[in-house]
Length: 243
Image (cartoon, rainbow, N blue to C red; front, side, top):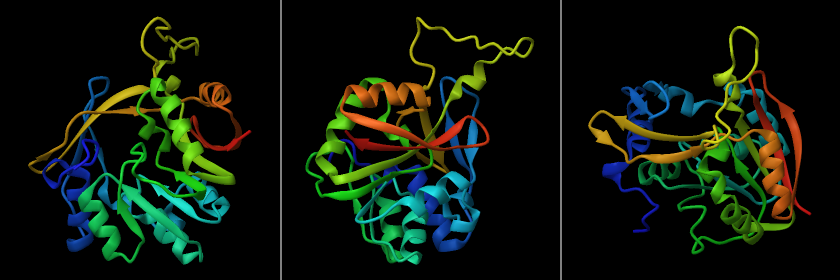
């Protein structure tokens, strides 16, 4: 097994997804980070329908066309919505339990790591939602990411990615300025670990990237970026295409 693919024993999100799919309910999917307090992901939200999705996700699904790659697909909610819209997609995830659920939901799915060069294909749309930039992990991994996108995108293809700018977490309540350590690591680089019941996952890196930083890196590696739509709270949907 690839080092980047999860095993069932290290797959807390997949275990939560499988429980909810088979029993209609799930326990607490706990999220830990060295930067933030413990949090929780409501598992039911991972099974949202198109009408329940945020406007940015709905917009991305409407724009997606041709052969679509749904990256980090989770329960498959986006691919399922695409299927109902008459669009074809391949869903991928590193979680074996999530892949089992998506297969049972009738989706075209594969357990795969986006960065694994053994995974190949040609896609008109690469869909990266639910803070899709997170899969990149760190800013230093952008060169590898854009190289992979050039390998996977068909001529004229695009990436539809959503993300958030975490600068609001560093806003001074008194004067509205932002207190960010410019000498430290990029403020959108976060580490997480998840736990579901007794299933504990390993720590992983997750990237929240502001639009200007995304555009800067994209331009360095031959991509242009368009702000498709801004969300209500520092989030946005971007469209990236090869120049």
